[in-house]
Image (cartoon, rainbow over the protein chains, first blue to last red):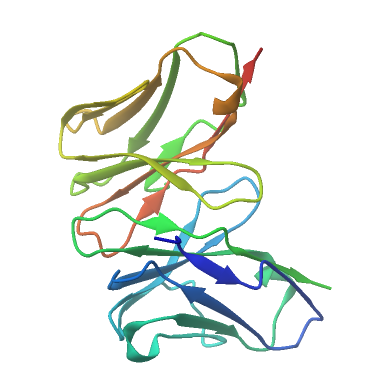
Length: 113
Length: 110
């Protein structure tokens, strides 16, 4: 069990550029969650997958955000036309299934210049 | 009104003290409650998970849930400097979407 892995750990980009983050969940975890965390705040739910199906999305997930989980394994989160307000830590978590708690990766820190 | 309220602290205690961390919530449908510890520039680490009301103990940590008051607590006995971190409460009614508090920053002084 190597834990949840996120890549890259830190991404610096210019406003208006597109960015993509990757999350590799714990092996055999069929649920995968994305959160956003800003300084001094707790994680805010963005979306979650049950295997490859995206089952719930937050209102925070504007049309510039898209998440995928092909084949129910790793997941990607893409942000198009980044804005200053997108600067945050993007956290991924996975769980074995319903009634099982989430385990988090160490996040991708996004900085918008 | 936020779904989950948590005092941001910071909370500063001497080594060996008993620490009490608390969260209140507004949604009576919440039934799954978790406490996470987060060190700077790291992801949250699961400490305790409880279902519905009651107490749960794990080593130096005790989690309490009082659903009638919509109030949850985490107690840390014999606190250590290594416990210095931000503590987050989280809760859900169906395990599909989780709501987190803003975190309490704890500093345990040697």
